[in-house]
Image (cartoon, rainbow, N blue to C red; front, top):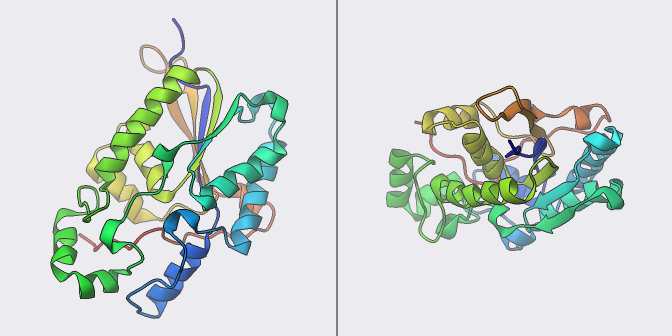
Length: 254
């Protein structure tokens, strides 16, 4: 029976971005607005983020050739694109089947709360802030934005593409924190409480690796099995600082 899944999937969060730095500074100073001029999709890597991407690329390059990615899919947002292409530059181009930006891997859209800190949301949209606290991040959809469920819906389509076009291949996905967690929700068949427990426990480190390998002995037709979870050795092995800055306002604790 033909194998349904890729042989390996790596899911990577982009390197630290200028937006991560600006958000941390705004929240530390109890400000309402994050001081960054670019559109979210245009926010670049920070200098440290570039170093993190370089360390990640070295790690992938250190794998045996037959274990390196040969398919690279990435969010078109600049911080994810530049992280992915830093890795691609270190790989053997002749071995790559495809390198493509996929808009379905973009960051969760924040709508009218874009660039606001939690304090800013509470100040400008108190009723929205209360609704967000009551509903929780999995189902809450800000006006003009997306809920986690909306993101999961587009990621189901990504997985359909992967199982149709990249069976038995080695697929690297470079995207965003919410994308990492929502893909985990799908691949590990979690429910709301399961993925939110993981989300509460820790932010996804920049340039960390979460990976799945295909095990033909699992299930009726074989399945993907979690292999690495928020793996940061590609950074620590080179002395590159590990960061966990948020991409979005922190949800109120529930």
